[in-house]
Length: 195
Image 1: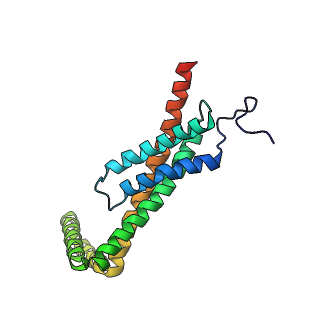
Image 2: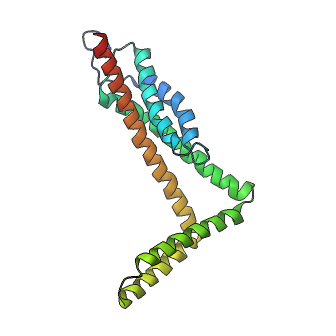
Image 3: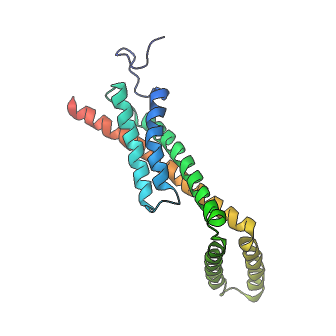
């Protein structure tokens, strides 16, 4: 069987996954740690995620000695980088919450902070429903009370924190795929300028 990168069959959309995964995993480790909820970097981690995915494409191309790949192939390499990083960020963020609550015995402080956030969101919802008619306002109040009871329960707190970690992971995947596509685009542009 002929190699995908021989001069005769050079298909820029074909990815050799073994070296691509090696590069993606290497760059996903620091990206996942920087993008986790336990990291002090915050939203700047998303920029690092896009940069790490673009860098993964560049390093992959150097190891393959191929002048370029398609934007779709770059996005796939970036997505793989993002999957590894998002998995790590999710695990680190969840572990940090677990350690804070149980090992560091910060459950009371965490619950107090959670109660403050829930109360603020309920006050905002109450302001939105203030202009409704009396029957609608009473229905809205009943719904608000049910939502408040669920959010203040341990299951509600854990569910919303887990949803937050999942939502952050989806953002990491989006930024990683975009970064991989951008890396492929930059390498294709560099190839055109060298021709």
